[in-house]
Length: 482
Length: 84
Ligand SMILES: Cc1cc2nc3c(=O)[nH]c(=O)nc-3n(C[C@H](O)[C@H](O)[C@H](O)COP(=O)(O)O)c2cc1C
Image 1 (cartoon, chains in turn brown, purple):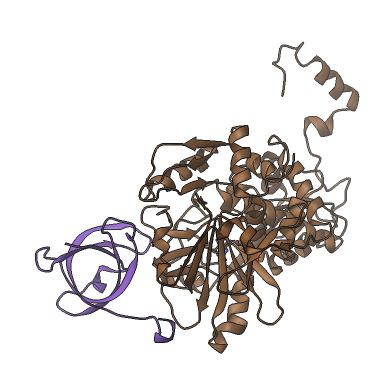
Image 2 (cartoon, helix red, strand yellow):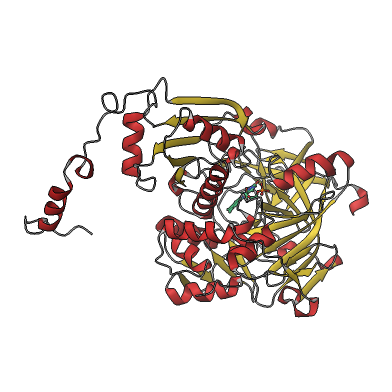
């Protein structure tokens, strides 16, 4: 199976495998489409492909693109039944290879140029921008997309998924955090100089381009997409600036980020499952040109309580990128896992406890890295604990983590405006605090006399007894264990 | 009659009897529903006082049960002229 190259191929693949449903009746862009996506997320149901939208003939919606591991496997060209560790291993294999550079194609060959709106024709309201949740601060254009910019000095390109709200027909306001790649470029360069920053927003990307845009990887996203897909991404030049955008994206918005014009953004339903971050003056995007495919499909991620892309996909890539970082430092980790239900707030790290302070070293690297602002809990367990098995992790946490020696609070770190537990002041200034739960037996305990013995079927019985009991299990009268 | 909506942290921001600067969004049906304008306006809790209606949402999107009438006096252009 090859990875679907575009959003359209992805929808087809999901319809075929039963991981998407085609909704033929008309749906309303105001709340109804959002409510369908939300319910599909909460039920882990197939993704809704909504073919008819009120007021917007010719457009469609595709919601909840990557909110299940099945759809994540399909996006990678894998068997939909692949397990999470299998998908994770494949991600690590593909993203540890050589970068796959994109190729530029001619404008006349690019589907995203089928319709072009410029000058007085530019009106964001010509696109079916949904009101995703009732009570949101606005209709959100960018919920599953990439904001594309180029660093003014280094020249490298950044694709980032930063939410964008329509303020008026030409203006969007977005949440670009100061510690993100774009946030750094704006604060280091454009804002102090009072210069505008060219941008393009690509909506309806191939699922792997979407995955790359929200992965905290140091590899440029256009190359990361190529690595994940196993072939180069096709890009095409914008109409009004020099940026290159994915040629098969459904909708492209071109424009400039304005340094000296601020409009309100939010509130918005967020991945934590709440509307937390305050309405505020954030980053202003002025749209100069809109291009889109015939019968364009707008993609919608609806963030709220688990599980949606905000938790599932971000947990996946944050965990795997941390694993890469820890391995690059030679730390003998068995794996890193974030349960999506933690709303990507809790990293579970398995490690062979070969030296003192290894849990602290892991936490310092995790919290001190670029990934750090997105989670505030690190649990470190030993290599005998299955990090994917919450029962085992929970047991380790509740029995091995010493309240005095095992819990370490990190103060005055970087946080986000989205943390529900943070004070209003800390949210406004992205001030964070984090905590390590060290669930390793201390290395200075005598392994024979001080370290307790785990009393489990697997650990305390001789192998021959275990085998006998397993072989006779149904004969004893028990139903088979799957 | 036009329908508008405003977000406030505190209902005291909607003081009656004076001119206010507000960011309001239209609730009129159509494709431009929910687009914003910055305006100078007067508001009143008396629904028949001013020609248009104003609905209020609080900081995290909660709909207030207080309703107002509103008169939009003029639109304020915040966008610097060089971008217009
Ligand atoms: C659906 C979705 C919405 C997101 N929205 C935002 C956002 O509004 N602001 C933000 O800074 N990051 C957001 N993220 C996370 C970023 O996409 C992620 O941090 C990405 O790596 C870009 O960050 P970078 O610029 O640091 O590389 C979102 C992720 C997802 C999956």
